[in-house]
Image (tube, rainbow, N blue to C red):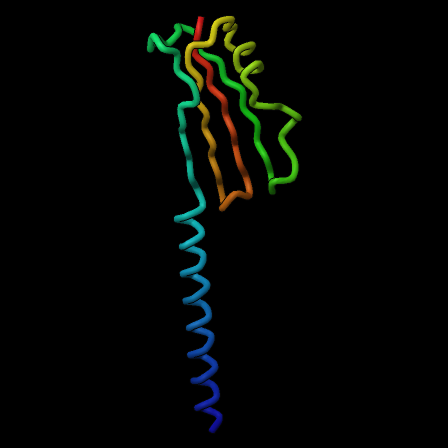
Length: 109
C-alpha cells in the first residue's frame, strides 16, 4: 500500500514538473516580439541623409525610464532634422510585455 502511494505521488510530481517545463518553454518562445512599421513617407519617396531616434522603455506597463518620450519632435531634435521625409515606429516587447521598448525613427534633412 505504501509503495503505491509513493509511486502515485512520484507520477503526479513528474507530470507537474513536465507541465511547468512546457509552460516555461512557451513563455520563452513567445516572450520577445519586435514590430517595425512605417508611419509616414513623403510623396517623392526620398529618404533624408540624417536619422534621429527617440526611445522610451516601460517596465510592467507602469512607468517609463527616466521620463524620456518617443515623440517626433524629440527624434527630429536628436538627429538635427528640420524637414521630415520619413517616419518609422518600432515596438519591442520582452517577457510577454513586462518590458516594452518603443522607438520613433525619423529621416530627413
